[in-house]
Image 1 (spheres, rainbow, N blue to C red):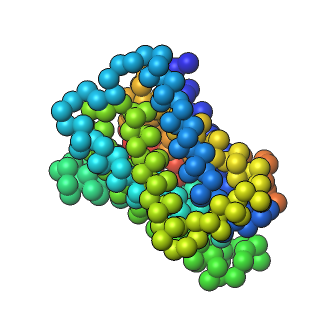
Image 2 (cartoon, rainbow, N blue to C red):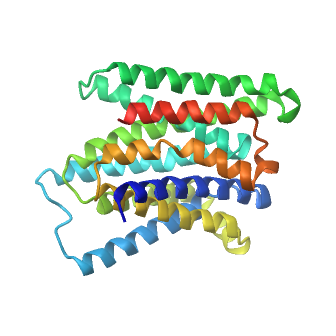
Length: 301
């Protein structure tokens, strides 16, 4: 299968995962918005894939003496992007929906770009500037949506808090993805990097829950409240990560990033077809998703 097709399937899997999270939240209102089981499912499916792939082709997972840097930065990416970023994104989805949460969170390339400019000494070109303008225009249009359609939304403070959570998700994911970019310079296998990223997030989350005294109650809750939508979201997330790494093994990561930038449009289309009563989309949502997607693509080219 061509890498571009695999990347598109990965973007669709991410979109479906977010929509399933939204539906699962609506049905059972999980305490952490479904993050814990999704991390567990994703982590163990990725680990299983890595072990099977290694048995099939026992090539070195480390190709450079800079591997320690790669492991460290991939672990940091897991803590910041996968744990904190997903925690904020899932809470945002619970408040403002999967479509609007995905649109705002899609601004994470701006954070990554800012780090690349200040730390990696990269420079802006006209295409980057155009992408930034389109990203900001899409999000500003989304912020105006509640004023244009005041009867279709929850109270203003509720929506405003959701937007802020999505912006926090943007910050965490942007910083985390920049660390992932630095980590991959350590010449480690992408699948290995994915396992490090996911398990760093999972182990840290387990420790945090144990420290807060919530681990036992979370385990009891998810074992006694089986939510098929949340479970399905975990499998779709694992599928998305698996397809992402498959794609980057065939085509440049820049190409994959461009295709992944279509996520807001995919989420909006799928939500409009399958969950319109739950997501309550407007023409503003569609235009905003389009602007943000094009902006992300321009930044990724």
